[in-house]
Amino acid sequence: MKQMIVHCSEHVTRMALLDEGKLVEYAAERGEQEELVGSYYKGRVINVLPGMQAAFVDIGQKKNAFLYIDDVLHPHLEKQPPVKPSIDTLLHPGQEIIVQVRKEPRGGKGARVTTHFTLPGRWMVYMPSAEYVGVSKKIVRDSERNRLKALGERLRENEEGLIMRTVAEDEPPEAVEGDLETLRAQWKGILRRADQAEAPALLHRDLSIVQRFLRDAFDPKQDELIIDSARAAKEAEVFLEDMAPGRPGAVKLDEAGDSVFVRYRIWDELNRSFARKIMLDGGGTLIWDETEAFTVIDVNTAQYTGGSTLEETVTRTNLLAAEEIGRLIRLRDTGGIIIVDFIDMEQEEHRKLVTDRLESVLAKDRTKTHILGWTRLGLLEMTRKKARQTSGVVQAPCSCCGGTGRSGTPDFAAAD
Image (cartoon, rainbow, N blue to C red):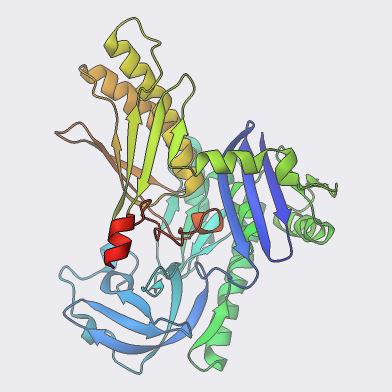
């Protein structure tokens, strides 16, 4: 069973997801800083750069958005030309275009946008021009995959594409079809607003943080939503009824004086999980360093001496670390290149045990992680997509060191 714990303050809404009592996801949304990912804009092309195969699009934000050639070509790979054309044959300055934000602005970079449009629903993801039907790989029964594939092919029209989500497993055709009709209506509304608006203009914004997690990770039949705001609780009940009509909601209002995050020890767990040094059960440790290019995680036995041999001690520590790393990657929403320096193991079968343990934990993550394998130096490489910013609402860069973890020595400060 999962529990969604939602804490609403004057300026920030925070959501923590517990799975069997363990904190596995966290997100926050500031009222004055709404997220852009998933939103649709009518933009105007400002620059087209053939040398970069990219264009910059004004969507009304501080920084122009970045549109790469792959996000302009047809979303179905089989429909793309064998040789990529130059982007200046597809776009020109001054051209107005509908784009969807796929990655938040970060640092000095603008948002990453695409013309491969997607509208996520409860049971499916709707793609107006993808021309194919896909089924979540997490649905393993061939009979159910074939049923959903056939259902999608029957329901889709013209150039539409559909991806059947994991939660669509065993759902009746009427529920799936109702979801599709809702998404079609949303897309028609986006096109209608685009015809009427002058660029740059916002056409459609993604759901709020609570609604998004209800849609993507909540099962009204068995999960709980615990929320400390009467207004937000009522909104959640209405959303759940629209999402899963006729099914009893599981919204619990908790308006006690202290924060719901305090009672469920969410703050304590966030402080522990977002620290640089993280203690493992038994005494091992993780050292977690994030750079601009990638994340490095170092595993140490520290005080753990539980095995009868060195290899057994090392393997046990690495297995504990793999389980915790899988949870923390999801919780911290770590993205990009991830390098894990596990303690050296002599036997290949032990390395496979560690990889399998990590994969089993990451399989529960809704964001796909690709484990690339072990390098010649014994490091485990993986990549994970990240579209949203999460940790900024937990931690902020230190004003003294600028986020490096080190500040200048007195001698250096004097010389400066």
